Length: 301
Image 1 (tube, rainbow, N blue to C red):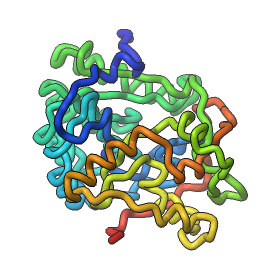
Image 2: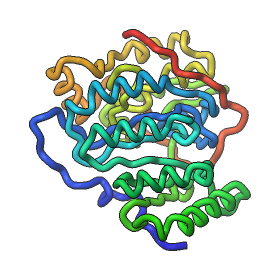
Image 3: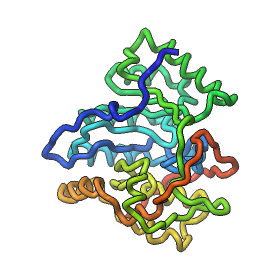
């Protein structure tokens, strides 16, 4: 298999100035659920089964409301969950491409790559980067099939698009992760180590999320309600202070968007839900028997 660069710092692009509210990168979900259950997933998709969809029309409206008013100096990521589980994924991707002038990246675990390669290649030709994140060890049966899927995609695409500039492959199965939220008896709880600066410094997903009509500081808070829905904990007293977090409306006045951009650069009290002293494990670990279908429901905050 041809060697492609991994997802390291050099792939983030160079900082560029703007008179608009500025963010390094922004995450957009096409689907909350996933066909894997990676322990330590920083979007908590490990407990959200395929079918845990988003409100696509709401997302398209959110993108129209916010993207023309901000500057993204690195890239915007369309991901999940597994975005290829969403039948309207290409529609969301097209809307993003129309509204931004930064790099656009489509993330996938590659399990459904063989069913979507033609439209994905069309977007790669237009400048979108496909980032394949290999979460399962090639020593496993599923991993061998997954790597075979990627090899066949490369062979199919290599005479159609410049893969050196439009394809990234990372292999997080061979890295170390930690649980963003604390597991106890198949329930989630906040760590509350009371050292928000250390929790913030360890954060593996400090990117702003566009979701449910609002802008959210990170994935852990954006999808918390759905995460807790998977374990029937939405009413758990331990989580009420975090569920009261106030995101910024996607159509908010521009002064509020500037404030949101500034807050992205610093810790917040919600960081206390995540560990200050992570316990690391091999990233290929898969959870079993915990997935639930929890579709997004529109909320008013």
